[in-house]
Length: 255
Image 1 (cartoon, one colour):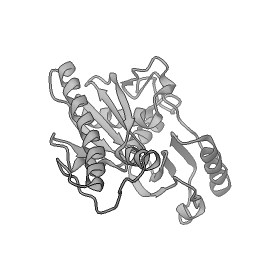
Image 2 (tube, one colour; image 1 turned 90 degrees about the vertical axis):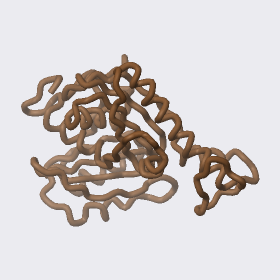
Image 3 (cartoon, helix red, strand yellow; image 1 turned 135 degrees about the vertical axis):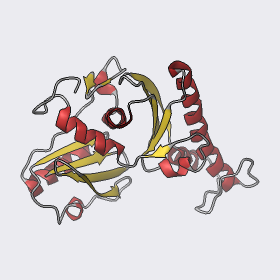
Image 4 (cartoon, rainbow, N blue to C red; image 1 turned 135 degrees about the horizontal axis):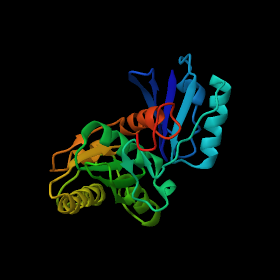
């Protein structure tokens, strides 16, 4: 049994892979000053013989997680990084390791499943956008603050702003709380829809749109383009990378 972990800047998600099926385990928020109780996450998990971690988090959290995993399962966790090409996907970055591994794994999962022009919008701490051709070529992408990060920046740098959990998204707001909620979420939606439109010019067809990440649902409610949410995209990409990527038992460089 393999333990697969998606370690983002604010959330940790995990799943188990038995060689044929992916069994989602759960998710926990780790941002802020609240320590992660790693022991509680996997207290009932047994027979793990390998651990793979797709991480874009800080080194201190990675080190703490790795230490716990060694103690808990007696195995050395592996932290894959983005490479020039794997599993049929070709990284657009001149320095391939600089592409967040979560983005690279998302591209691998999308290519394996759909084989069509695709835009992936990942909404976590950041809003990331990536364009993928049918043949697996990664065209590149964009990075912007997520709506949640935009709101946090406003709270931290602007006086007298009213922010509350009851704020609504409207086209024109008549109060500050709704104006902030609407402005930040609609900004994310506008960027996604513009990126899809620009990608369509390159592909000569409107690409499929996949949303993933903890903030995906909040954007999906407002996007008018056809789209689907794939919550476990990174973990599914990690499965494929582990099974068919560089260093896998039967892998070639391009899968």
